Length: 278
Length: 312
Image 1 (cartoon, rainbow over the protein chains, first blue to last red):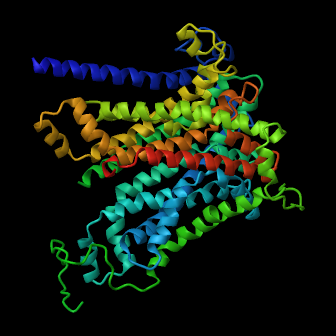
Image 2 (image 1 turned 90 degrees about the horizontal axis):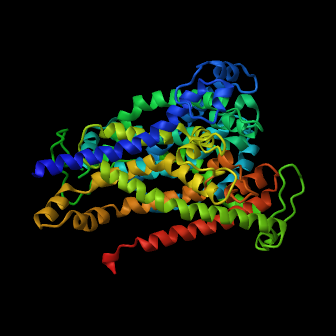
Image 3 (image 1 turned 180 degrees about the horizontal axis):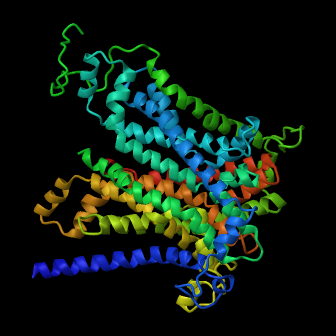
């Protein structure tokens, strides 16, 4: 009896989750399908899930157009997101470690100041950071989309929470072995923090990859744009060609989807880490 | 220190009275060296701009003009004059931001929590579902915005076709708000779900088991164990979502372009256009500080609302 109820509940759960999944997958399937349609097919009022006739015309047109160097944009996005994520790890990890594990004058004041900026709405930084980036001559170049955002407090806050929970015995043992603080950080703390570091890397990468407002205003010439900023330029077109738009969206999506499928394991590992604390 | 042995045995318990992480041998500047790279970025791109932004807001500031006269609070005064050009544009945009935030935040908290609760168990396919729901967040706002602009197209869009409607989702209000909120929920539901799911896994299983032993119903366990256990995560999610919604830009830029008549042009959209297209940086900075004051008030209210009631 209870077994019946349990399997019924399970079936219901799967039904609900599958319906939600369908709402997530169908727009992406339709995007893919439309990218293979002709110009007329994409503008048809009847929904066509399987393009008839199927063609690569949209891809040929978008990849062949000098106004939309989409492969350059992709490369720019990859460099920017990777560079940003690396910069966040390299600067936030030692800072978070010091704030979590070391005793020194001004520690609580520094930590309080850093955390306080988590509550500063980023909009107040928009105009002055543009002026600062302009002073540094970074406008229209990748450092503008790599460096300023790494000043955000999230990485330090996130990693500090992790370092605080590390057992002190390991560090003490390493200290007895004659390790200095830097060696303890590199050989003991960082390897233990690997799941948190991977999670932070992926989150920073994705945030940067998704960033839209800042790049469309700080990057100007076609060859220096990131992918979202470049695609954003299509928005201005009067006559929307959905076949081209969807082909561009597919090109923008595929590599990230592949990356995501590979890295998903790490996201899960990074998240389940928090379950191991207890 | 004289009692130190050469033993590197990891199982040796910490000496009593010595809290973990306490540092003994360390040069006085070591912690500052650890902090220096981050603090350099923090100083230049976080602390400096906050002050510099306020300074800018007190000036008539155009990036292309050498002369930037100090005008005191005049930029603010102009914005608080709803009859003026800047004032009326600004409050239309603030209203748009307000509508979007109020409409989207509850959905972006409740729906991801519900999805996280559904997925908080062991069953086949759980990771696949989670991967699917999280996928749009990975794709980014540009892809998501364009796909939905297509699906929401008033003439050939799938949404109208399958719902049997004839609604101009991208150019009419209120349909445009439904569209913008819906797309945002679709886009970021997975992110908040994953955060809630991590929070759910942090709640010690013993608490649930103890409540079960006490004969508590599922609803009672949810109220007395799950929700209190999720409080820190919820505060984080609510705050982060308010900030994200109040900074909504891409969806509006890509799907409605602010239409109709700038009614869906959000405050940050107007600030970016004013400061970074028309280069009226003084006015734009003043706008951003007013918006920030609203946002910080909202955050304070969230913290007030979620304050630990047991300490009353």
